[in-house]
Image (cartoon, rainbow, N blue to C red; front, side, top):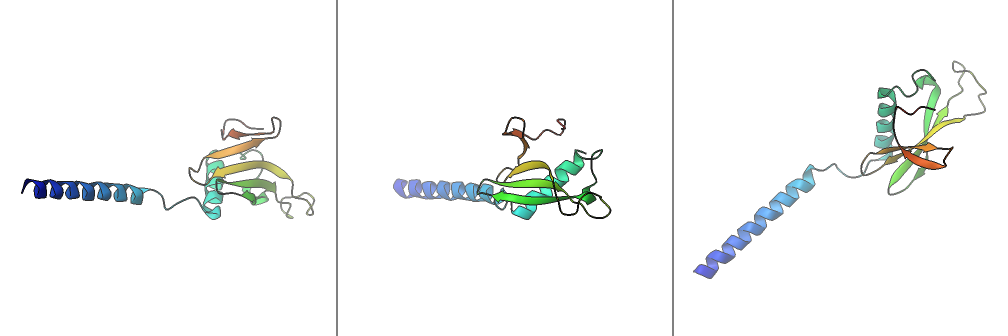
Length: 126
């Protein structure tokens, strides 16, 4: 009888542990960011932080995904030379480049002066 009780307790403990692990797994996000979700996160972040507020209207920029890996999306923020924005309509210069980590949502900004990716800091403006 003692061995049956012990087995029952072990099985009950295992079921409880599996239930806890399953609940934790279910509470995580639904997986890595999609390209649309990464672009929306980036747009929301730079708008919220007023990074370009005194520099250019968001009506005159576009986001272009330049590279996609399992780890990140690399995105160029480009000038959009429509009639109301001015500029040569045959060009679309890059203003900034960003990387959005697919798992964490962490944002990095490319620094061309050091040729490296830096942690996104809205206080650092070029």
